[in-house]
Picture 1 (tube, rainbow, N blue to C red):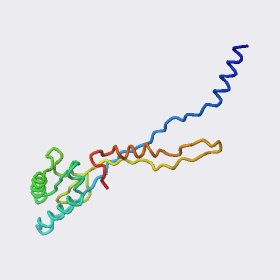
Picture 2: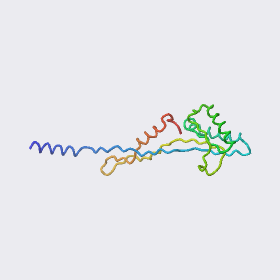
Picture 3: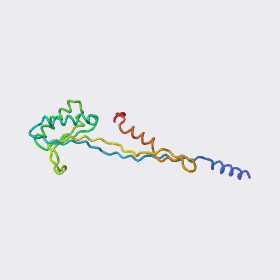
Length: 164
């Protein structure tokens, strides 16, 4: 009889326990985003090409100063300008290890250019999450991942928490 009462007690108390939902993680995609500028040096106007490079670097300075930069050339004029511009970037304080210089590999670009600058950064794409809602049984059901999404956004670039 005692076992029967203990069994009933356990059955009744376990029926009142809250349902603990498993924590849902979020699906995160890390994608490379490349910012690029291709220039043709027209009429040997190297000064105008350098000014366009300066404008590009100024506009994307937060990436240029932290991410790898690639200078690619496809002509003698482009080779000279890219070498000079590489030295200019080093004089601005950029790390030589993050700068690369090279000739265009044939077949990689359809359009010819004299000089090209590329800056690639990685961005985390996290899903947008809905608010919690109550279903028919008045239990909270998570339709989203708000806390996880914000955590991943803050972890993407911890050295730049206020960028953008």
